[in-house]
Length: 316
Length: 239
Image (tube, rainbow over the protein chains, first blue to last red):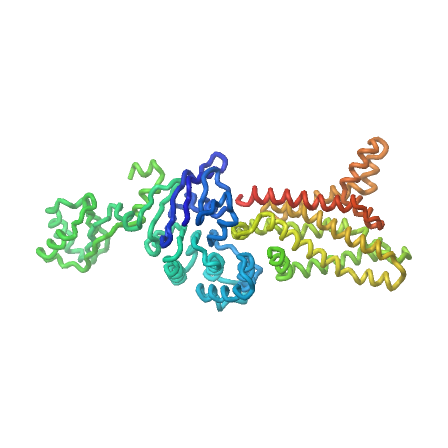
């Protein structure tokens, strides 16, 4: 439903976006990930026709944003970064304005506004001016605006940035609820968000796409994939280390903890599964462990490895 | 739609009321105290309209400065321009709302007209023409201000630059400036200077001659600067 074709954007000598291409199908939630300044927002602005690309284009439901901007713009809802809205307007006036721009007649518009206000829970502040709203409510106004016309393509630029944990949870609920019938792109630098809501993650840094995979597959690239985490008393540490020395599949053992308890992270060589062997050993030698976890991998670890500037990456 | 939102926007804040009150007070003060409305002993609004270019020099850039600069500063421009509207609709809608708003302020000076009607027998044709001319001039200044506003994020800069440009355009038609040219410059140059000035065309209208050329002058300034504004919005929106 959304196809991005070879987007480039130069700001003078600076290449902000460098040959970005991907496509999004119905039912997919893409996490568009990258460090600050990686080109996420610039890409979003080009997809939505706000910025003209230096080269390339985006096709929204068959409409080229360059050639047929109006047709393309009807097909998506967009929450710009920071969720801007007119501070002097009340939520009610703002949504009525959006309804008119989106071409709803007064009867339909009222029904639509009622629906969207219920969806993102704006009822309490409906008659309030936007400038008096909290950050969470302002973000919801932005989302209400983006989802107003029930668009097939939804683009949200940092939808949960600055929200408290409850609000983040709620926002993710809204995204999950509409996932099935839409193509969604969320730009973010929060990894937890990608794990929580996205079916696919695209990692971008210095304007280039560096990875495009499911969050689980990305996490599997981590050195911690298949690592085993043990919690035990500090007194047992030396004994356990001695026993583990017999296993060949172990690359390293990281220890963290205090005087009483310690957490050992046993990193598997080449990320092969080692949990079964360790469990057998633990049972046989009576390690007295309080916790046993197999890691799927740490996304933040992968993220750092992928997005670090080239010289640092080679050192790591 | 855009015009409607923008127009309602003026009355959502104290801006509209402050503007209208100041406009009415200033125009009243200038008319009665500086313009010698009563002492002239004539039933016309000449002393009222004479000051309009100078009044607009200060007040219209104040309305125009926020048109685009504010949208850019607050980031709403990104929301606004990714809605399914044409850039031309956006530019014209904003302009029309502001122009209508100034039109309302201007229309609220009607008690002055009633006063003159009560005191004597004014030439109503001249008064209607003058009101129209005044509104056209406001539109021209507004279009210039909107274009300048599109070029900057900073409202103060937008105000000062617009006021300076408008000052040049007004001053070019005054006797002082014409005097500077007289005696050495060829007639054609003087004509050109006067012809380019807002002041010259406005005073021509207030004399009661609603010449097509004067109207064309104002309308073409409006059209040209709206066009320039659209280009500037497009060029600078993301910066």
